[in-house]
Amino acid sequence: MSVSPIYNFSAGPAVLPEAVLRTAQQEMLDYNGTGFSVMEMSHRSDMFMGILHHAEQDLRSLLNIPANYQVLFLQGGATTQFNMAAMNLAHGFERADAVVTGNWSRLAYEQMPLLTDARIHLAAHGGEQFDYKDLPPVDNWDIDRNAAFVHFASNETVNGLQYADMPKLSDGMPPLVCDMSSEILSREINISDFGLIYAGAQKNIGPAGVTVVIIREDLLERCPKNIPAVFNYRTHIDKDGMYNTPATYPIYMSGLVFRWLQTQGGVKKIEALNELKAQTLYAAIDGSGGFYRNDIAPHARSKMNVVFQTASADLDKKFIQEAELRGLRLLKGYKSVGGMRASIYNAMPYAGVEALAEFMADFQRRYG
Ligand SMILES: *Cc1c(COP(=O)(O)O)cnc(C)c1O
Image 1 (cartoon, rainbow, N blue to C red):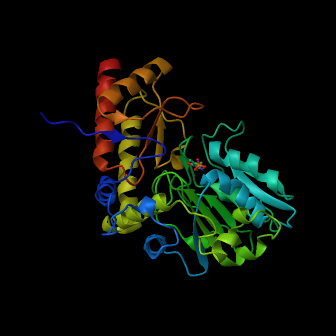
Image 2 (cartoon, helix red, strand yellow):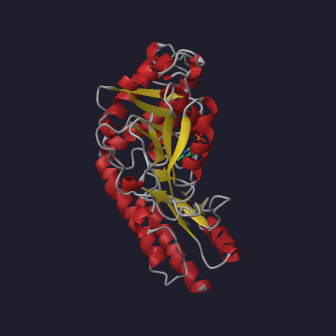
């Protein structure tokens, strides 16, 4: 009897490539002939420094990160970056601008003012009533030349929105600060269009516990001296990421994911596959004659987090329960949004999306 595969659609912590988990399993008790696991290594040992160095180099090559950008693997999650970005980059400025397009960028907007003197100006938001069904085009953002930065989230994990064309500001405008937690490495981007990019690992990079920060070097001059060292980007740069103990095992796992991405042909290849996966799911929704709905403006639909619902919360519940039994796991939408959410990050194979689309058709035949 064949066992049908399990597909994990969790929004985060999310599915990891099976090949990566197998390598980690093989190396669990004996990393590279050392006789112990990566978890048991000093972070200052040559062995771990090698792991960190390779992870950084592989990330740099995958994303084409220019030499004038620094890369950090920090703790504290993307949530900590809401405040760190403001504390470090808005010091001495009157104002910083924030775009609110969903759950995460709203939280950033609310948290940012707490540890900076700069006023956080709401530069744009999604929908008259903040209903987050569409994205404000970058040309409509109300931004000030003299603002410290402009913060936005390129993919809203909870609400299922994503900027199809990555926002870019013209020369002379403030640096863009982007929360890319749920889409980094899913498509090609031009790092030089940003001042700072941050991403919690547990969506599209690796396990929870490490946050990637990519920062343009000149911005480090803004980091004030009078903030706690652990929240200062400059401290971490000056100490080569070893100011305090980094999340060693999640960094090792992230490094394995970077290498796996390279074997998949890099970001350009995975981007094409991600397009196909998203198209397949949206076609299943739009082709259902209204049985399934996604209310996001078509040009703003996320290719990473596909939200959808049926006509009733009861039917949604039934869908989620039956899907679970078929091995299609963790499809429940975020509590404030309801319905279903299929997160289809890099590590979700096409077969998983196909299996979900087939189940959707089957469920509709039985309940439609
Ligand atoms: C998950 C997520 C966060 C929060 O990340 P933590 O690591 O839990 O702090 C922030 N922003 C976005 C876009 C996310 O998807």
